[in-house]
Image 1: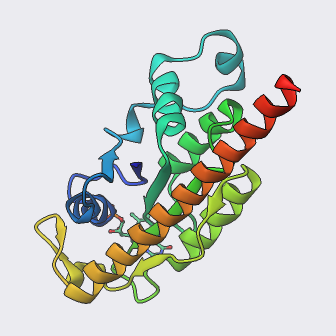
Image 2 (image 1 turned 135 degrees about the vertical axis):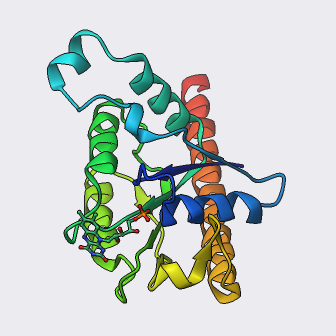
Length: 193
Ligand SMILES: Cc1cc2nc3c(=O)[nH]c(=O)nc-3n(C[C@H](O)[C@H](O)[C@H](O)COP(=O)(O)O)c2cc1C
């Protein structure tokens, strides 16, 4: 079970990167969580470039998303939306089709009392349009500077909530896998008959 973590913040001291770091520690084998090396390496989305010379970094991101059983996205809230960094990555992923049917869990951390709720709502709408399956459980971390220190979640109830989010994501990924296997069997059955 492979989960890919995507972070919408490029900041070295990012609270959202800390959420992914903690998630990687909470995941127990055979589950694994790999965090994308940084969406800041992607160029701005350009439909001309997409059709003429797809950048290698974009192909790599599409490959990583395609190979993942599920995604954990941690987003900052900027001006009541998600970050441009994350939106840009999603624009590159629209054309690849890798997000179609992909189970996705959303998390957000913010120093504000709202915990990034509006960024997650904004993101959920975009992901739904892309065909992703955003799981019902989400994790908003309000007053996140009090819950996170030294790049990790230190608040125990928040760590527990993150573990529950990961469990639900793994369940959704297992369901998606099982449904895909049934589909393959049905197609091979109809080809054989
Ligand atoms: C340009 C800008 C806009 C922001 N807008 C919001 C906002 O609308 N809502 C909110 O809760 N926090 C807002 N913040 C605060 C961010 O949530 C905070 O900087 C957070 O730590 C960013 O995530 P990160 O720690 O993962 O980098 C904003 C910060 C910046 C720099």
